[in-house]
Every structure is written in C-alpha cells, then in structure tokens.
Image (tube, rainbow, N blue to C red):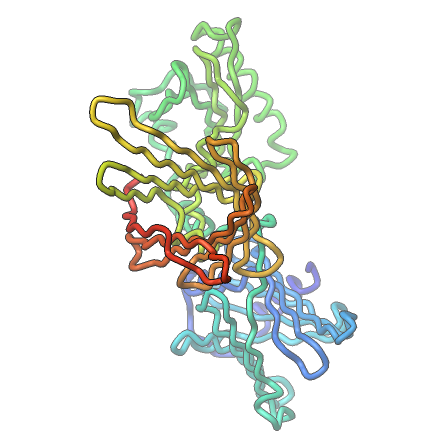
Length: 446
C-alpha cells in the first residue's frame, strides 16, 4: 500500500484540478465500504474488499474469480481524505499502471470520482449507503455497454469482527484529537482539585470515575494520543510513567497489598480520552483481567459495524405477563465466543406457595449461510437438544426436535421495534403444524 500512498501524495502536490472541498464527515460515509462484497460477472464473480486503516484512509482490493474459484485479475485500491479533498486510487495487477480520481461531487448518495488523463474523462461512482448492497459504476469512452461498467455488489456474511474498525469510534476519535486534551487544564494547573503529583514529565490525577478504592491516572505532560503513537524517543518517558506509578502506589498504601497498571489503547480496550494515560488501580481485589461488562448489550449496540440486523432487532430483554405467569426472554451477546445467548425463564405463580420456575438457555451461532443459525438448547428439566434458526428480515423461525422426538417450531414475528408475537407450534402425526401457545412480549429497558 505504500506505493498507492506515494501516488496519492504526488497528485496532492501536482494536480491542478479544481475541486470541491469535503468534510471528514463526508469521508466517514465511505467507512460503509468496509467488508467483503461480491457482484456477478459474466465468467464468475467480481469481489471487492475494503478495510479501514485509519480515520482518513481505506485500503481496498478488487479481484475476479472464475467458475473454478481461480483469481484471474486484480487491482489494489485506496481512498484518502487530505486537504479537504477525497481521492480514489486504483493500481492494476497490484504493481502496474495506476489511475487517480478526485471526488468531484456527492449527489443523492453517489460519490462521483473523476479523472481527466490525456484528454480522456473517466468516472468511478460509488453508492455506499445501503447496509447490504453496494452500487458501483464505471464510465469511460471505451465502455460502450453501460451494463459492462455497472456492478451491484452484495455484502458477504462476516461473523465476528475480523479485526474491523468501528467507523463511529474513528470519527469520534478524529474529532476529539482536534480539541484540547481532556487533561490539559489539570496539567496547566487551572484545575488543581484532583492533582496528586506533578514534575516536568508527568502529572498524576485522581480518576473522576474511580473503579477501585484507589484509582489514579499517570498522564504525560506532552500529549501522545495513544500508546500506538509513542516512538523510540518516548522510551524514557514511558519508563518514568511506570516508576511514578510505583511510587504513587507506595504513597497511597497499596504497594504491598497489590495493584494493577493498565494502558487502554483504542476502542476494544475502552479508551475514550485521547491523551495517553496509565491507570493505577488498587485498594481491593481487582478481579479478572477482562471486565465481563465488555459483553454487555449496551456495548454491542454501540458497535455499528459488526452488529448484524438480527442482533439489532433481537438483543435485549423481552417480557410477557399472562394470567398468573411471567415469561422473560433475554437475548445477549457473547462476543468472546461469537454466540448470541438466549435465556428463557417462565415463572408460574401460585397463591400461598412458591412459584414454579422453568429455565432454559440456547446459544445461537451464525452458520456459513446468511441469516441461518445453529444452536444448542438446555433447560432445567435436564433436556438438551439442537436447534436450527432462520431469520428472513421479518421473522425468526426456530425449529427443534427434543429427546422425546417431539417436533416443534417457534416463530418470532416483529410487530414493531418494541413488540414481538411469539407463536409455538407442534407437529402433528399427519405432518401439519398446530398452534400450541401464543404470547406477546414487550421489550424492556436495560
């Protein structure tokens, strides 16, 4: 990719094309390209992959695959935001001639890139707004048949995050780095209330939201956004931060009982203040290395990139009240194992007696077929059996056969964003399905 970066910089210096200016927010829409896309081609499929490198750079690749799944051609791609302009660069066969296009306009979601080379006008148009469909058009004098330059890509299923970056987080980070450091006023002595120590290199502060009885921040006086941005020249500074943390642990009385030091770097580690700082935690047992809260529904909903449409609709707590019974379904992510976990609880109340409680749990995992899930069910009666589920964008259908060879299916129909109608069916001896139970569940706050 260094070749494409060099090409783009050369054009930024030497190009004399008059162009509109665009904001980083305009460029952020192109983050929707991230992932793998496939479009039909006369001899097979055209594949296009994009990956966010940072807030101002996407790296891409095109290749065509014939019917035997053999790569037969390819291009290396780049999208760049620089100088309030947006650039698209394509390099054929990954090392051959290159073409550089400049964004000329955005029209109803179409990103129109233009290139005038040797008097010949070419255009590449991307429409990146849809969740699962990407439209791309190529225009040049030698493309006489419009269908030859038209590609309608479908996004391929991508379970898990595959190391992809979250566009919303990248944009928040870019905006934050344009503002003053969140620690600058304390470093400058304007807010001394939580200052514990300061020398020429670092400032030590009490945390505003302590997670332990002792929770300190060791902050370098010079802003370094993340640990990734530290260089070899910062080696002595980083060592000084560690020794300062050790000294503060001794001063606060936690050195012998134990303490934890942590650098949080970018989103998956929970970094929200983009000025490098070292956490000093102690005064009680710190618990596991990974906070179980990272699996929470709230954290998953904040991830606009990796979250599947099914998750957006289903994750949460759903409750139904029926006569003297309460049914609760809790759908939550298990990001570590790439499951969606369903917890089912039915509580049947009796006057003057303890309620009867039935619990069940299923772990749904996306298969290689988009919208299809496999699962395993376990319940408080000791029963355990596999499930198969299918989500078609409107309904979730779960089919099962238990150890007693009773066959059934449950259909979740979304009445609106907050209401589900759940219908249980049992298969009859003649092969027909009969409604066994039906209830309406309402989504609760979490």
